[in-house]
Amino acid sequence: MKFKKTRKERVCSQCSNPILKGNLYGQKSKTIISDPKGQCIGSEWNDNTAFAFRLSQKFDYCFECGNG
Image (tube, rainbow, N blue to C red; front, side):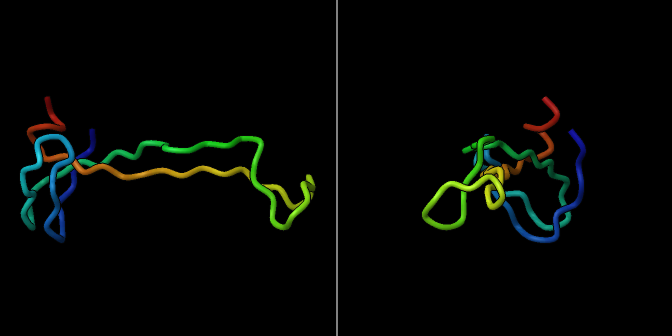
């Protein structure tokens, strides 16, 4: 996992410890909902207006949890 310095206070998603400003943290995203067929704008299905839909959430990890 790649680590970088945080500019704001965060909370580790695994151990719930605070990550203070200037400390190293890692970040991963997880896909919550994925619809490759897609969503359509309007009331009727149309291949021209359909687009793939994906919803993801980012998770922050402290240096200790991300390293081990």
